[in-house]
Length: 470
Image (cartoon, rainbow, N blue to C red):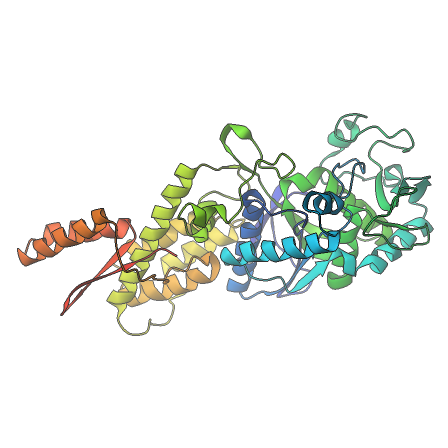
C-alpha cells in the first residue's frame, strides 16, 4: 500500500519514500519547559503519536527523536527578549535548572496520560551544547555567519539562495522591520537569525557556556539541527511540528542545516494546525490564557476523551476547543468503549486471527495511509464494531488491531461503587422490562445505558454493570 503524506515543503500530498527501505527516521519538536504544556500543544503530540503508531502498525521500523528545549528559546522570534527559562525562573523564584526539571516531568505526566509513546531518543538541549558549537563553527568556516558586538553570531540569509523555501519566497520577501521580525539595525538582513547569543555585559545568566565567541548560549533553532543530525544523520526522513514553527523555526533549521552539510535536511515536513478557543484564537502560554491536560480530570473527563476529540478532525484542519465539544467526545468515547466491550463479550474466547483481506480492515488501512486520515479511520472502526453481519470474533480482532493506532483504551473498564441516580433508575427499569419479557424495551434501555458509558451484563445472579470511563 502506498503511504501518502502532505509535505509542507512541496505543498502537496506525496507517496512516502524513506531513505532506507522499511525504516523511518523522525524528528519531532518537543516542549519548551518553562511552563506547563497546554492542550493546544498536546494536539500536535497526539497527532505525532498516532503517526508513529500508524507506521509501526504498517510494520515500519521507526526511530523517533524529540528535543526538550531547556535553553535558548527567547520571548521573541526576532532573537530579542529574554530566554524563556530565565523568565520561568524569575516567575517562580527557582533556578532555571529546577524549572526545567519540574516542567519536563509535568510534560511527560500529561503526555503519558494521553497514551503517547515515549520517543526513542530524548534530547535536552543543554546536553548538546558542544554539538551546537560545532555546527556554528562549520557555518562560520563556510562564510555563512557574522557577529554583532554585544549581541551574537548571526546566520546571513542572503548567502543561501533558497532561504525560506518551506514558507515561500513571497513570504520571505514580505518580512519587514517591525513586523514578524523586529527591528535590529545591526543585522545585515531582516530575516537573519542568531545561531549563538552572547551573554549581556554585566549579566550573570544561569545557563551560559564558554565558546569560541565568548560566553553565551545557543540560538533556539540551532538545537534541533544539531540534535537531529547527531541521531538521525545529515538528511532525515520526516520532521514534525506545529504550524507555528513553519515561518521561522523550521525555516531557519533548514537554512543552517543545509548550509552546514550541503545536503537536504529533511525530505518531508509535516505540521499540525492550531487548536483554538472559540473567538479567543490560538491558545498561548505567553498570554496566560491556556488550559492544561490536568484541566480535563478536574472537570470529570478522562484525558483520552481529548485524544478521541482530536482524532475526529484531520490534523491539517484547525480544531476549535469548547467544553461542550469535549463532553460530546467523552460520551462518544464511552459509547465506543461500551461497544467494544459488548463485541468482546459476544466473541467469547480469544479472537480469531485478524482478516487482513476483509473490506473493513482494508478501509481502515487506506484511511491511515491517506495522510493519517484519523476521522475516516475512526468512522471505519465505529461501523465495523456495529456491523452484526461481521462475526464478533472478527470484529474483536479488528478492534484490537485498531487499538494499536488509536490508543483509546477501548477495553478499559472502570468498576464503580455507585451510579448517579438517573443511571441507576435506568438499570431498574431494564430489569423490570426483562422480568416482563419486554425484550424490545430491554434492548432500548441497554443501548441508552451504553451511550452513557454503562456496560450491562446479564448474569445468573442478576444484572451487573461496569462504568466504561477512565
